[in-house]
Amino acid sequence: MAATPETGRWGALRRRFITAGVGGPVLLGLVWLGGWPLWLLSWALALVMSFEFSGLLMRRRLELPIWALGTLVTGLMAAVALRWPLLPVVVGLFFLAALFGLGGDDNQRGFLTGQSAVFGALYIGGLMSFLPRIRELPHGLPLTVFVLLTVWATDAAAYFVGNSYGRRRMFPRVSPGKTWEGSLAGLGGGVVAGGLLSTWLVGALGPGLVVALGIAVASQLGDLVESNLKRFVDAKDAGAILPGHGGVLDRLDSALFALPAAYYLLRGMGLS
Image (tube, rainbow, N blue to C red; front, side, top):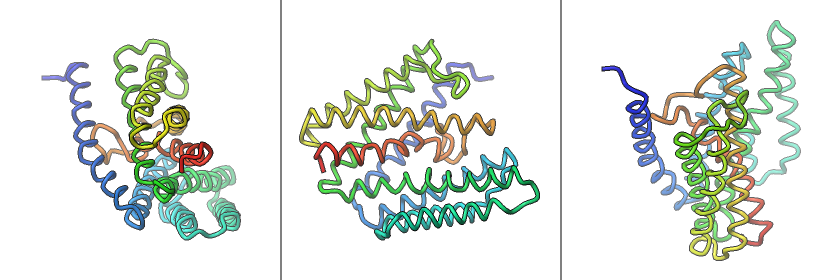
């Protein structure tokens, strides 16, 4: 019997819950451990996202080999983990990507591929490195849990309200499914979750609400950026490794923008 829209929706929702029920505790367990286990997890997730990113570019005939992007991502994350000066690393990243863009037999595609290498390394390796960096802050364990739960609350509220009540599209060219109703619900969900968690995990309600609002805004920007990337290459999902979610990049797109925003807001508000 063919699936109706309702059964299809509930089936996808069930797969999302199963994936979150397995992956969430694993992530939180490694956050609890912190240190090199969390750095290794962040690196492994970044490599999977690099594979997905390279695959997306292939749809536009931009051949960025996974070994090349993976090397750039690994080098950048290692530099952050080992506290190397980042300016020489970023300059070296630029030179490597620029030289990589000289390859191939098409000048335009070669140049775009080189640009994509820089973007991919900073987007995936640079932003993902903020997860263990937040954990390394003073009181890093409760702060990291606070950030992750706020991101998840933002995503969940936007997803459920947008699917059920969304009518007004935000940016149809970028993401046809995103609505203003879902976006406002995401902001509200993130702030409410942040408020409930602030006194427990952060210890200050007012500053915690400010950080939660920043996380909610950054989360939705990250979602839109990845949606724009998928529209550019005409892909529905970045991958299929996570049932109900698509790829790892599809699942972590919000967190990639939220993590650096949270890191600097936590430090700026004196919560770390």
